[in-house]
Length: 273
Picture (tube, rainbow, N blue to C red):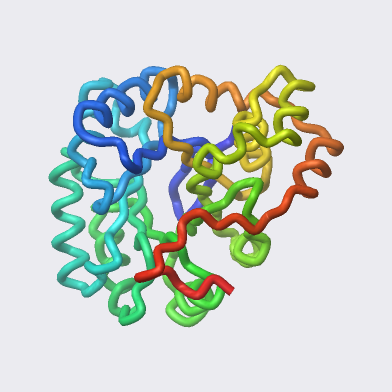
């Protein structure tokens, strides 16, 4: 499967999410995934596991140039000096001299977008991150960043799965040639027992989760970063790439209700509508 080419980087469509993985378990999961062939690892300052991710990368022995590593700055650290401090700390924990993609993890109500993206663009110009981007940004926020500020956004990372419609965000991003990276692509396990997905899976010798993941990865300009701590799960997610969905399958998935937003922190989530 071809990677997503964006702002001078090639980002593998399937990556390993690491939210809630900690310590040795995180290190082992990263090392395992890289051993299986994953080359896209996603972490964040807020996850508290960048040291584990870095250790897993180091122990894998995979050449740095073969890897895509994303990390993110927390929404409380969006002042220019705070971004730099957070970035320096992330690089140190990851034991890397650069990351491939540095994202604003969540928008903040009091954020100064021009100042933020001036700082992020400088980090890119300095070669410390190869690209910059955002996560959890709505279309109105994206318009400000892309059209008013002209920031070179490499992606928007948002919750996206078979049970949540993201057509507005996806349409905007596609029109601008910006990829969408889906987190919670398996709806936090809620799709495992879905009868429609199970039926499609039975037809293809696949699981409901593999069907849901392939549905995302088949879409133009969409990547996905399922969390998988066990090697069996990591392997199953890679095997999802082999599933061949047909028009009937896609029609059945389109008929599923798409109103289940699972990540919506009341204290700081943007107005999604």
